[in-house]
Length: 330
Ligand SMILES: Nc1ncnc2c1ncn2[C@@H]1O[C@H](COP(=O)(O)OP(=O)(O)OP(=O)(O)O)[C@@H](O)[C@H]1O
Ligand SMILES: [Mg+2]
Picture 1 (tube, protein in one colour):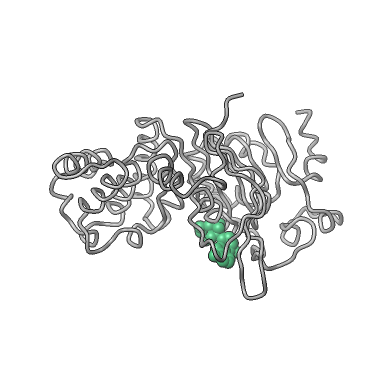
Picture 2 (picture 1 turned 90 degrees about the vertical axis):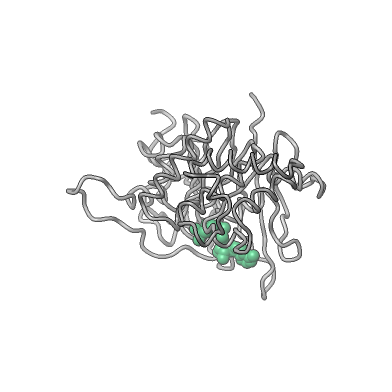
């Protein structure tokens, strides 16, 4: 089998807090193949951003450690890569966009200045060549009247336009993998749909792989072919999107699906999952979802469940459900 573009294997990430080290990410594995679009979903605090930041090693080195696991990019372990290799990979191989474009854009630089800086750093482009490429990139992210917009400061642009500028910066060096961490959460629904459509087009035009992070399974379902569901620092289910909706295995996935708004107006009111997600410092024996799980059994509170293959590329961390469903024989 071909080596996936990105393969996170059994990653554990710990942070130093007042009381010692806490585990925010525990034994996380996920793959992104060439040209794939993988969605990572989970409630706030489930560990999505920590996972994404680990790929580019953007954590504070003093307060973060990764005691186990590997992050293989085209087969090479990024956790063991040299600083110079990581600097090359960030931006030109793997790019990332964040939820809030305003905090990532420099308010005192024009759009053209900011994108030019990326082009200078990674591609050595300056002057007229950089300017030409900036306009080209703004056109690529469908910013109308690109030549004029290039000289605007970020505060003159709408939220959707700023996010387009961020995307232009991210794709400036034609990365193979784009990690989009809640790229549309701060935007209203219409603009959100436009940005997702843009990402979908760019993915095809530039043959990029995309890892899309969202707490909204509806967004993920529209965009990704594969979904990784995270809960309290662990992956609890990993499946092709159609399979996930047709037959969710983990009770947490079932809860997330029930919380996706249905389009038809006769649908029952939205369901929420009772309770809240535990923080990394909270010790919960056995399955970390067990205090909130409607299908909990005694054994769930004792043994931490392992990730098990179900079928059709679907795996989940819920042995009792896998047994009850007897899904292996479906
Ligand atoms: N530097 C840090 N030090 C201590 N704890 C941290 C640190 N960064 C994140 N955490 C904790 O790790 C957990 C996972 O955080 P993370 O930001 O990955 O969640 P998330 O799934 O991205 O949530 P959201 O949807 O709100 O963005 C949270 O409980 C968070 O408080
Ligand atoms: Mg986050």
